Length: 218
Image (cartoon, rainbow, N blue to C red; front, side):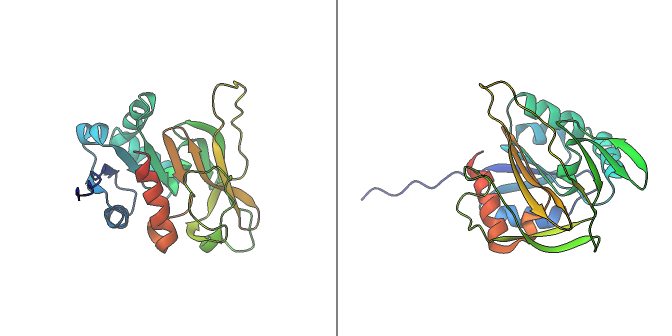
């Protein structure tokens, strides 16, 4: 009997620009079979099969740190070449056009139009487990039950999806939603760019399956 070939581990860089829980992301990705490096090195980030951009803290501060590490340029260069990038939490928020916190507006990476604004909810920050409503053909949530819960920690969110795709030859992004006080964007799949508002690395088995789904696309 011929031996079953083993799948070559995917190389993933967790981009270290000073504003993310990089160790948790590293452990979660390694757990699902990735070969992980935490770095801000340009060559490594560009060469990796996948680039993960975490984010914790204020929108404006994260953007400042990302630009200081040339992360904005790296993300743009990877996406222009169709190379996968995934953002988590504030790492997702900075992919939008702008963020408003405490009345201060800051520019994001503008990969998607839209504004990150304060959540309008009885209890903020939103800290806990929520279900997510995903499109039926979602690859990110493939194999996950409808009632699976994911872990959120945030006070700001994108309340409306503004990108309209009118070209029938370009697939529209797949947008997933959840609710805390009001509906907001929980995840996006848009070609090589995927992102989640929640923390898959803190979401147990469901989060591990989601990360594995991402690895399977690399």
